[in-house]
Length: 118
Length: 319
Image (cartoon, rainbow over all chains, first blue to last red):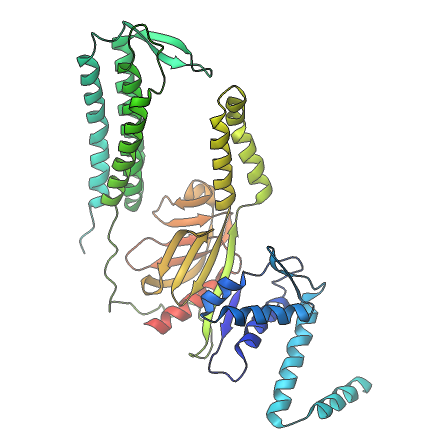
């Protein structure tokens, strides 16, 4: 799978690493039960700190996309990783854009609610 | 450009070595002919007891013929293969000549009247194995071609090479796996290993260790990790590197379709009939890395086009 991080970007590195996994899920190349490469390997090929990758994997676990088990590594656990990951990515992009234009959480929530009521 | 002739020289040396080993063995057999019984054991059963006997002169001739013919058959095979395969095959042929000569002639000349003949007389086994290793490693090193110097001579990437459209500050990497199908391979391994199990049950318990060792080796080399990053391409299984292509030696990368049996004569880490090196686990899509001044490296991975694009992008940045 493809890994890309831009250290000059304002987005934190671990967020970018997690985004690589989500993008792979969204494109359907990672299915339930697939194993992610060990964090150590990802850290080595991207030349980033191991903790950066572990943090990315932990955030993916907190989102319910992967399982982290000792000895088994990171395994995709979401039943529909594609849709879950796509929504997550869109939400992340929406929040990033909101921050850029200065919109608050309330503004964004109101916007989403009004979109649901249409 | 002059071609590096060392692989051919190493192969010629291994071809010369086989008759030399046979001649030395025959000479030794002639020198000790008065100490050896007229009838010598030439074959042993599973229990270690000799079960076939032959007259000493004809046993010596048989040993000489085997010592010459088997390595030379390998040399003949290497001669028709691509040049870069000659070095490794020279090592195997040379090692085989020493191994066969040492054990066959050793097994004959160690036989004395009144003693039980041994298939592997201990005083011959250890020196033979040591000499086999020395000769094989020596020929392998001799037959290794030195890759051409690449400093400052990097040709530009071909314009049709697929690349990724990303900011130059982006760190790019690609990870994948090439794995042999576990089920069929396990079945084949068990079938192939049955004779070993039978021998072990028949009374040679150390064969269990051999079977276990081979099984572990197979399990470890069953699949390989493939990574592409700023240092180049790496194919490895459990820390054992099959291939490492530094980025500065990458001319370009692309995808190809491979047929393991037809192009590589099998599965796993292979030298192809055209000299390409490959870790091939299945037919179909594969990443092919064109190296500067060396044969291509092929790895069967899914999404090979993406891996090729990452490698091309990184190579273009480095030049």
